[in-house]
Image (cartoon, rainbow, N blue to C red; front, side):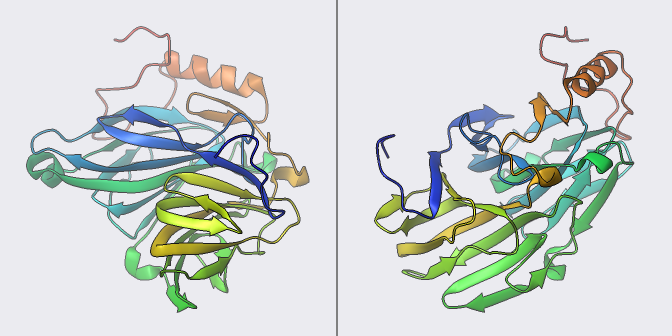
Amino acid sequence: MSETTTLPAGLEALFQAPSHDLGGFSVARALPQAKCRAVGPVVFLDHMGPAVIAPGVGFDVRPHPHIGLATVTYLFEGEIVHRDSLGFTQAIRPGAVNLMIAGHGITHSERAGDELRANGGRVHGVQLWVALELDHEECEPSFVHCTAASIETIERDGARIRVLLGEAYGLRSAAQVSSRALLVDVELAPDARLALPDSVQDVAFFVVDGAVSVDEIVCATRALGVRAKGASLAVKAGPAGAHLVLVGGDYLDGQHDRHPRFMEWNFVASTRERIEEAKKRWVNRGFPLVPGDEHERIPLPGEREG
């Protein structure tokens, strides 16, 4: 789509997520974008894969820190083993939801499990970061895992819907954050139509696979479409159907702002001072270690290894 294309009234912006390499497989970063730093409280959205991991290769995201945010990890295929400084070790498998609230500071790693590392396989999923409300920025870290079986699925009008975080379409997830964030997994049958939910103030759709259209605008795989403020928006699946995730939530701190937080490296905060303090704390080994994964770390950009 060219920058001069006129968008339908309900669609504020449409982006194609650029890809980069992360730990041996391709990742498309849908958020942040230069012209859209956030959708509601969601300040980061990565689409991982689909990637084929060769036997004996695996992947490793070494221990690294976070502040001021919640991470949500959701897989369509494969397995990722999460370990954190609270002592949780959790294999993330398709259909389950991992919610980690960093608060004033947490360290975690994400690695291939033993079976995937030995035998290879496919990995495919999404991860988002949710900025925390001001009065929760410095909260105690916490971790919640929701099994695939615990997440209700509804089917209506050619749409298969699972609410993974927050509340929409009459469903409420067990995974919640203070900033009323939303993550919904949607599979659309060919030519099925879906109205984006009005349960939150700000919402976008991301095309995981297939294509949808908004009026005459076609949105292909890895496209992010942002609903205009105060508008209604519906998408229609193409003749092969479509797989989407919906992300968003209420505006942080009631500000109606798409630049709600400062973000640098793995840190999100309401002030630059908090980020600078976190950077120094990581360099000075002030963050807690990850039990069972104490011997490696990702250095701060510009920091010497070792």
